[in-house]
Image (cartoon, rainbow, N blue to C red):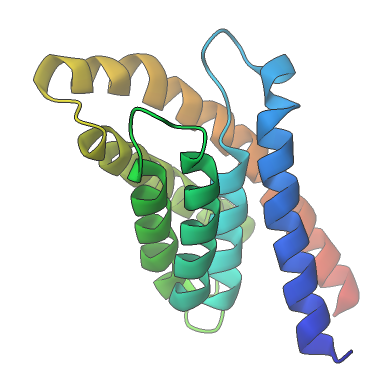
Length: 163
């Protein structure tokens, strides 16, 4: 098996692992209803590494998988995750050299865009939308950014060691 196929296999395993951890581990590390979005971290990391098309496919695959569990807002996860993966893929490593701190900024922008798209696609309007943003999105964004910062720092150190 050549190197490119091995990289794709590892990236798919990371996406599947993020989904599994989201469904199992996150319940124990949640603070009330505030939970980090591990699959979104994996999608954004993949999009920043591989580009917009890979981000789109990863977002669609993960979003459709999560939509299996979301009876009320069918399709909202797939729509929000694939749009964020595609958009942030334009900040790919080959085009934009970014340090881990900048990747965390991209993660924050992606998280806020994701939740905005998700809530609007789910039918949240006016007061319910703003309540969800202030009570759920902003605290979850901070939690996701903390975990994402650790992930991006670790991956930067690992790739620096390989070089």
